[in-house]
Image (tube, rainbow, N blue to C red; front, side, top):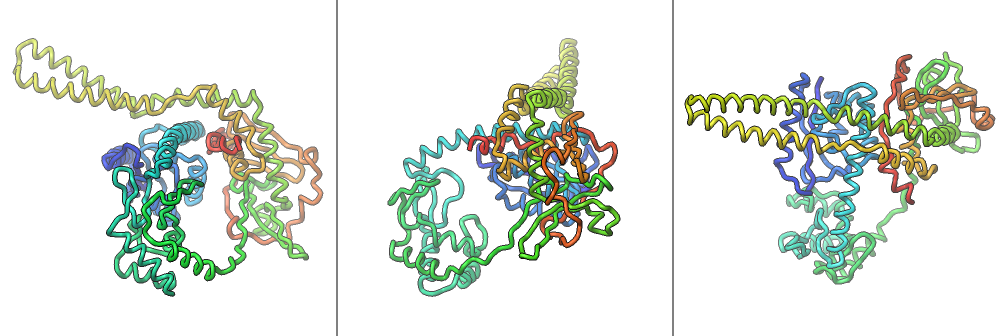
Length: 523
């Protein structure tokens, strides 16, 4: 199998050596498993809590070329610590036939492995959120003093002892941009001028319309310190005067065109999860337009749409999604939450002693045995100097192996039943109308849904977790099930799925969103 390696380190207490260590572990893992590494994607000094990572985005885009089938990471938190981003991008990779592999976490390919992966990612985000709170406190303190809060500094400034000062090299570039724009140059003219003179943005990239727009609207250039929703006039040294800045704003407003009416993107919540109860084919999103030009959205059986050989009727999108979300909320009873929590903890405990830990323990045992043999040889008077030197080497090896084993066994703490019950209990209280919450609920609990005209069977990602829903009891079907005609597929929502096999009812807690969605619960 062809794989690519994705590695990154954040700016928080990590260095280039972190990348080297990740690559070393990933290549060793690939060699042990007979994987062919066909490329590397590396982001330096970029946090995993954001998806604004150039190499990461390039990797996601390249996955559509079908040149690799796996993305190998040092451990799962290198891929993402944001649960929503992780679920989103893993879904994109999955559609391109690519899965994410971890070199340090022994995650099997079966359903139990998926459950374990979900827990590890959830805990990674938990610690990320905890760290973010501490960092935010420090940033708030710095912001009160108009100091740098970290991250990229705007073009024209630089940092000296946490203070934001004017950069004499790049500040003239900012002034030139404002002067050219006020003098009548278009953004395209300014972009061509800057790129032709090999002038880069503060990120080291070529200029484009967005980067010019951000500069022209940045109040920091008139001395206003900005942090979140707070503005402090004269908190920074100014680069351009007020008159020049105001004139630039006036011209931008004048040139601003009325936004075109963009085509609304419709997200089909049950895509890849919903299957026809009659022929077992996937049901995907389609739309239809009434005589009054009103747009309607449905799920339609792929077989029915292709050749009409299946008589499954389409179902109203909002209706079936609301029914599923409500049924899933009701499924999260205290008893089911306790069952899921115990199951997750059991898997964590079994996986905590992973393959790499076993390897280190074996090497440590071999080291101790070799050292013991050397000591016996030393006692008998054999080649004292040579043996003493080898004992010293073995001691260094022992210390290094002990440290690696300590890191291995402490990096992946086993969550308690109480922790997971808390996550799921809070998750159950989320805003049922929030799109991210609804998506998280489906991703976490649903394996497959078989939809008939009068009922549906929901197969959950928990062991033996499945139940039937009588649609007649939920609400009337009138107006929701329609004959499959006069509907056209939406390009952004059309997706194909394989027919589920009979033994596909293995449990797996796929993509849980509990930790991420605590924020929506609180709001």
